Amino acid sequence: MSPELAEKRVRQLLNADFWLPSIQPMEGYTRVHDDHDGSNTGIVQVMFGRDGDAHLSTDMHMGPGLRFRMPLVGGGQSRRVRTALLILAEAIRLDNEERPQTRELPIPK
Image 1 (spheres, rainbow, N blue to C red):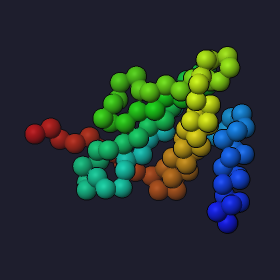
Image 2 (spheres, one colour; image 1 turned 90 degrees about the vertical axis):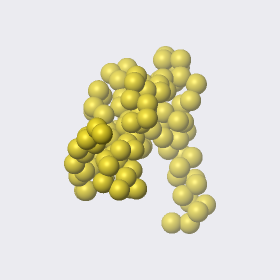
Image 3 (cartoon, rainbow, N blue to C red; image 1 turned 60 degrees about the vertical axis):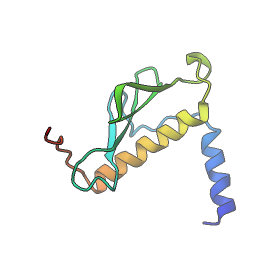
C-alpha cells in the first residue's frame, strides 16, 4: 500500500464514528511490550466502558486510567484519539488471538 493511500485510509477511519462488534465493553485488552526480558512488566491496556468511553492504562498507571469520552453526548474532546484506541483494542485482540501471552506477575524481591 502506498503511503498516500495509507494516510487516506487512516484519516477516513479516524474521522468516522463506528463501533467494532468484536470489542466487548468492560473487557480489558492487554499486551506486554516486546522488550520485557521475561519480567512480564510493561503492559498497555485499553478498555471501553458501557458508555463507550475509552480507558487507557499501563502498569505504570493501573489506577482508573486515562479516559477519552464519547464525542458529543459524553463531552469527549479527543474523538480521533478515542477511535484510535478502539483500533488499538482490536489490534491487541487480534494479536492475543494469534499469539497469546501468558502474563505471570513478577515475584517481589
